[in-house]
Length: 64
Image (cartoon, rainbow, N blue to C red; front, side, top):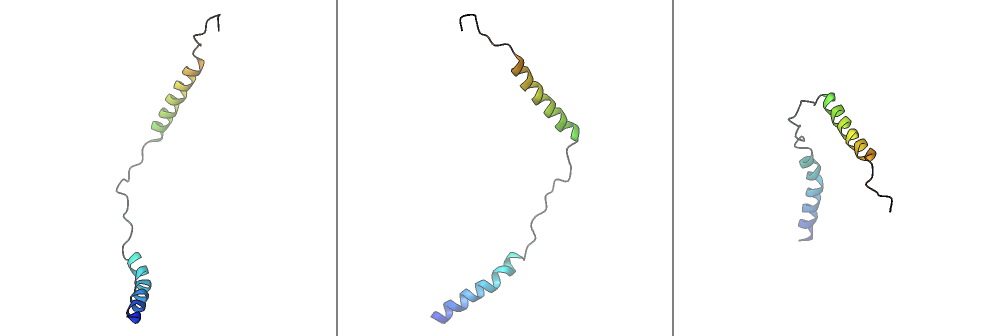
């Protein structure tokens, strides 16, 4: 019984790398890259919103 367990463990150790290398990882199907100007436009809009909110006057009165 002990010999069988040792054999199974040894077989698992020997065969595990073969199973791991048997299949190649899948390649992504998306080959198109988004244009750079879309990223620049997004950053420009984000910075514009942050600046607009930052420069808005506060609604404080003379009693604050």
